[in-house]
Amino acid sequence: MNKIFETPLYAYEHSPDQGTPAPVRHQVVVIGAGPVGLAAAIDLAQQGIEVVVLDDNDKVSFGSRAICFSKRTLEIADRLGCGRPMIDKGVLWNRGKVFFDDRKVYEFDLQPEEGHEYPAFINLQQYYVEEYLVERIRALQSEGAKIEIRGRNKVSAIGTHPEHVTLEVDTPEGSYNIEADWLIACDGAASSTRAMLGMDFVGRVFEDNFLIADVVMDADFPTERWFWFDPPFNKGQSALLHQQPDNVWRIDLQLGWDIDKEREKRPENVIPRLKAMLGEDVKFELEWVSIYTFQCRRMEQFRHGRVIFAGDSAHQVSPFGARGANSGIQDTDNLSWKLKLVIDGTAPESLLDSYDTERMQGADENILNSTRSTDFITPKSETSRLFRDAVLDLSEHYDFARPLVNSGRLSTPTIYASSPLNSADALDGPARSRPGAPCPDAPLGDEFLLSKLGDGFTLLTIDADAPDVIEEDGITVNRLALSFKDDPSMQLKARYLGSNESAVYLIRPDQYIAARRPSYDDNLFRSAIRRATGKE
Amino acid sequence: MSDLILTPNFEAADDFYADLLETHEGMDKAASDALNARLVLVLANHIGDQKVLQQALQAAAFGSI
Image (cartoon, rainbow over all chains, first blue to last red; front, side):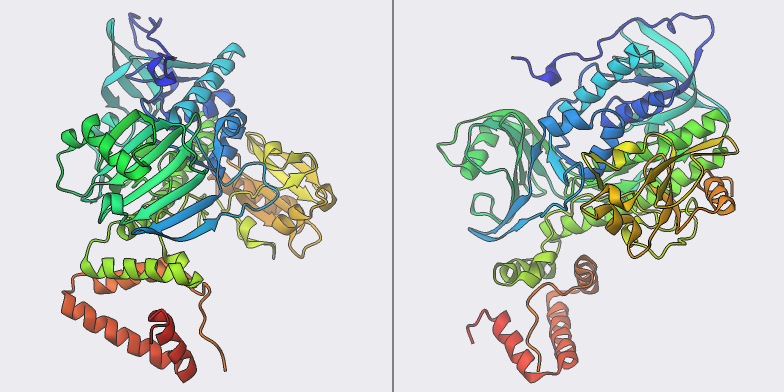
């Protein structure tokens, strides 16, 4: 049977744009059909924007790459129409074990909080995520949405202008030119868009190599995340074992700095390493092997006029903490509604500056966390190793040391506490739903809160009066009227009211909270809408 | 009189750990050892309570003293 990543999903087709006397202008062109580019395109197309995705390949990503998708990503995918297939296919896990040398030092349970539609994490191969996103694009096309993916369309030159971008695209039939009002570069850490435009990408290189292998095996390992520090089968280094769907297991083996990458990648060298880890008798088949060295870095600015960078092209982190694909999807979630309003002319172009502010904060947080994990996993000095080993020794005996063990701090959404789009917090309510925070989900009978928010601005009222629709300078805000009684488990109350009897929330299209008050005040909420759309 | 706390009590564990390593950054072994010794004494003085300090010594030695 062919693997999904061996089958062309968006085979090359001749486009009417090829051979026109003048280049055809598109509203948005996205470069890169990875999870980030596809999510951006779906988000825009769902909101009626015309978008063309260009990719130099015609298949989903080879190998599984990103495997751990966070709750926030699943919630965004739900809004994009792909949350269900991801959760249906993905592997759910809550338990982790930490090993040091030849012993288990402790295990932990990520006790999931009740009352959320989506779990904290699932493991799922990136190629499945891309497949579901492509299927969603096909469904949007059949509904008449103006969205296209062009396989084997490689951008070879980019020209930037004050109000548009020109692109030269190479195809199997030769090259052609198109134009775009806006260009979103989602072409990964080695972004050729970034290179063609001669832009910076500064940061820190970690002098280490990791062998990453996806193996197919019928093994009775439990559905848990196992992490080894300094194990007997990989002395002085680390190792990770994590389950994906279809009996595929992700194995990460730290190799150190001075190695011959090409040699280490050969099956005759990989297989003995895996046997030492899994046991001589375990039967497995290699699906994908790669060796990577990683860097933590970001661009100084994500938006350059009409060219906007999202995902790994804008920022790169170490893999510990699942912060690559997850943060990239959050970039597009943040960007798409802003770009839609700017294209429609209902918000000023300066609204896009808040994409830079908010997502650079997200990138810095991710870089900080993944750098710290890396420093713990790979101590870079004798003293650093001394403390690391002391933490691990203590963690076997005492609970207090366990929060110091850092094999990756799993991705959580960034709180934009000081975003210029926030209005001052006017509710003495729960901290987790303050302005700048993403809406926490809550159960509503058989349904959930987040699935009721849609693609636009929402005025959430809980036991408070307000108009059903607010129109403010071209922005439409629809009310979602709830009562704390709609959730007998009282989680809606705990997450949105606290000790208040009523509350009114202004929620952005990306499900972030822009303002909140105990009751509706027409002037103040209109002002909050203007502020949230870059007009104040 | 209180007992030694052996349950998680850090306000920001990752921040502390990063600051700790940063303080050692660039030091040779002897300088790092001396810093660690001073740090133990500074923290011990802050705790003050002799019973708690004895429990801490026991805990760190895994009960071998």
